[in-house]
Image (tube, rainbow, N blue to C red; front, side, top):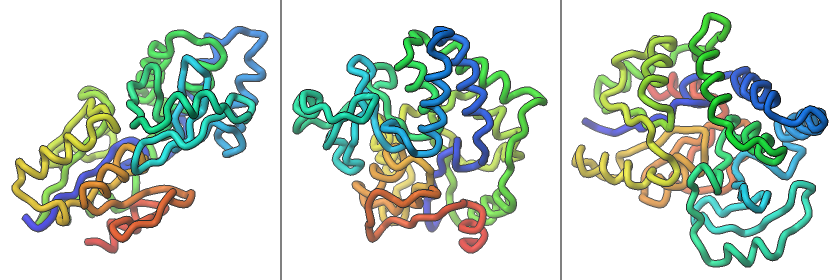
Amino acid sequence: MEKLYIFDLDGTLYEGTDHFDYYAERLATSVAEEKRLEYWNDYKKMKNGNHTVQIGKGYDVANDATLTIDAMTLEVVDAHDWDGNKLPAIISLYKNKEIQFDFEKIIAIGDGWWLPFVCAKHYGVKNCYPHYLETKDYMSSEKFNLDKISGLKEGLLKLKQKNKVVLITNSDKDDVERLMENLDLTNIFDEIISSAKKPSLTTEHFKKLQHNNKISYKNMISIGDNFMNEIAPALLLGIKAVYIAEHKAPITHRDLTHIHKIGPWIKQLT
């Protein structure tokens, strides 16, 4: 085995955002009717990058505070209320502390799933999980069209000829199996780690893979669209990282490659 490639799933091995909007629609049914217009206006601003809540930040549910986080140290460097006003008290609360994401009280806004979730929380929705399940049911129906990435399967199969390919995802086992079937990627990966609880357990997963495969960190590559989940933990261990995002990466690093799409990258790699 020459190298170990570690792939994320959502936002990495398939594209499209229709399911995020569907989730937002389902959540809207639990928002008080008189607040729904505000909910939709804020959600649209988030999607366009015109709101204090943005991908790459954190969210303190109890304090309704958006947290700007140093992706490499996981320390809070700034905090704002819903309208963008600075919150010195919240900044002091987290000073010199590594933030612990639990996905209930402290949210890592790592991808498009979390924008409608945070918006719904702000507007008083107590339990978002039933609507998440509704969205997952929608994604398994004929109504949902998954955007397959041209050349991805062929690229992964070529990588496997000399390397090992692993999938680490926060999705649960049933979701992963269904998505693998829909993407025609069943039996491609040498190992699949589901319900991974990234970013909290990302480093632990990487260390275990390194130990079990008896490979050096410099020969491992983490590929994903979530900087906090897949990229920063890799760079801190000396693992190379490939960040998939339309927007600029938050840092520059000798072991970091920034790409807009995975398709062209994997084609040139193989």
